[in-house]
Length: 480
Ligand code: MN
Ligand code: MN
Image 1 (cartoon, rainbow, N blue to C red):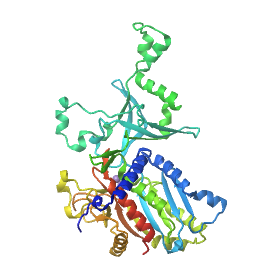
Image 2 (image 1 turned 60 degrees about the vertical axis):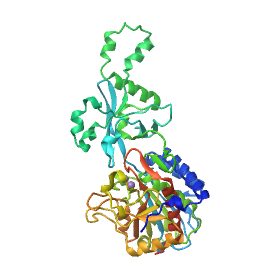
Image 3 (image 1 turned 135 degrees about the vertical axis):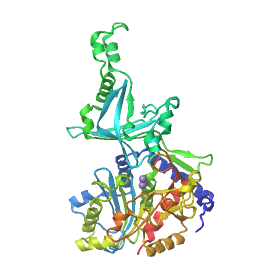
Image 4 (image 1 turned 180 degrees about the vertical axis):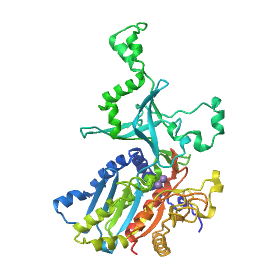
């Protein structure tokens, strides 16, 4: 199969649509740097399109009929949306799935300490990262602190131009002879990824308040010098957020690259941004389900948490949350039975969407040129993922691929097929195999990304737009 550059297939009008879509996508990225922020924004968006909360309908004893739109959020980190079709759900539904968690540094539960005059927050990285990429970058802190009284304080600092940012230090090149000899995975070790959050001792403020002169430093102030920088930070946290040191115990704070998504290239053909794995598929799936209009089969979109660490936990794809939501929805359409839920799941079709590694000429030897995704060449299908003998892969059925191909050709969607990299080089997992456990047809698909899992990842605007078109074609036409 020949790779066709998608840009070449677009009219001037379409190119404008691509740019408009990219602007919307970049805005989504800028306002959704954590799972929780994504969920907030998605719920606001879909409620304006008539989506109603499933739990509210259940409590009110309401029924669902063709055309109704309903959603369910789990623990503020995962969401599933349904648009009821003309056909029975028992006969199967069409599902778009993607994940909204991204690699980052998570703040530990007892994180705050002072060393060498700096206040630090200790972190534990989340997902697969090249640790050396995270030093000397402006970083922002996003998340929540839940206090003992049950109130939640939202934190988002480092994004606005007036905000301070944070950073991880690195050794100057002049002293780095030993460091430079180390292997890349040892150059910066996990425990070294602590962020610097302050350097100003509290006593300076106290002196000002007391109106004392410069050389009047008393013994008392010298005594206060122990951990004075940390104390200064605690005072700021107390003033700004009303939180104390112990509150870190029940906090979820994510440290991410600071700053907005940017257009890349003189031709502005690409997007350089944090968190595109997998918010690029999440955003395009969301946009697709919002624009399809009435479909024959029920359309579903599920956006989950925890993919980067194995889809575990109550909000990961392995959670029963999705299956329970299907059962609740079928109960409201009047179809519920244990057997009908199983039939619905087994007869469904799914595009399990995640990013695919784009061919990088700078690392050509890591890819099989015939079976790799090219940036700008359309939506990607991975019949299988996994590595070293397809280990851990979903491996979609040929009949299903044939069905999808026919739909995409009919709807003139530009697509390519790919593997992650060379056969024995490694690989990665997605959520596809989990849904496949129900016996449904699932295939890995999505958008090609250059420097995937780096603090700043690159995508093609054309691919993002084309993938959304592909999702629309799938939701409208898939029925196998
Ligand atoms: Mn991913
Ligand atoms: Mn990933």
